[in-house]
Amino acid sequence: MLFAQILRKKAHWIFEADRQPQFAPDIVLVDITDKPEVQEGWDYDHTTGFFTEPVPTEAPFPELTEIELLQQENLLLKAQKQALTERAEFIEDVVAEMAAQVYQ
Image (tube, rainbow, N blue to C red; front, side, top):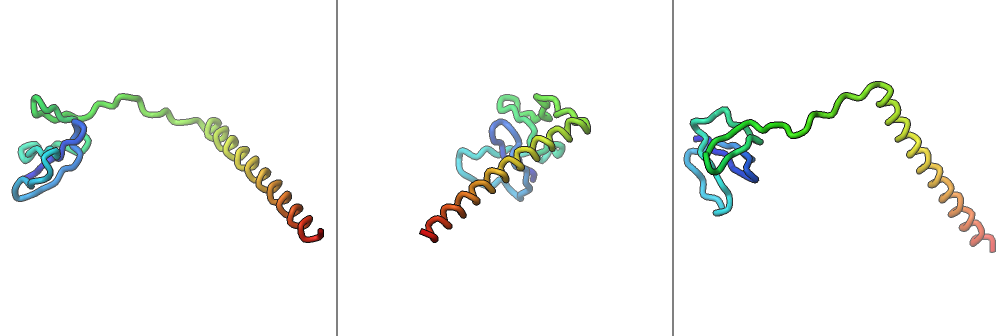
């Protein structure tokens, strides 16, 4: 037999078993032996008992052009350079303070 665990109105987990297992009462299992096309992530309507493929709510992100990719990389590199500069200045200050303590 084939079962689907329903979570948040979706087929969350699909598994095979000889009989329907007894889990906690709040875990919903549906026998989908006669619906082998159902996949994890499909929507489930509790009132009708039907499964449907999920409909994407947002369009996928468009692919970035080479210029846009380079602009993003440039932005990240500038941020890394700034962080390294600030760290180097901090280390210089620490070394100067340590030297002042040692040579008092």
